[in-house]
Image (cartoon, rainbow, N blue to C red; front, side, top):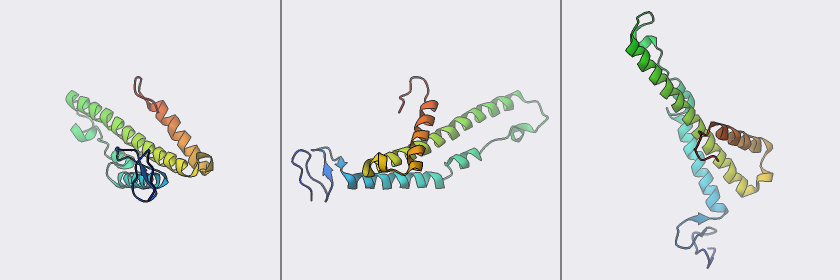
Length: 141
């Protein structure tokens, strides 16, 4: 067990910030990354995955046929389509952000300069996409 007077002690090899219960150290980062990967795997296997949500599109014709004028159906379809697009986009961004945090945690563990080139490039692509999608006034990464 690592004893760290300034930060307290925790399980073998893991330091905690004094009184906070926050685990620190390489083992804590590896466990955090495993947890992130598990969340990402669950998201990607669920109906909430981007492709699953995208498949839940509601065609206009399903509300009143193709040639029947019905203003309320048009309005409902427009509202549904807008919310659907936003939801699919939000899930895609969440998926990418979780992936980026996992890459960053791995980079902390092995040194960002030691990451495979494709992981570094993926991290920066996610960063650029996330920044581009941030709304005005929203905290940017």
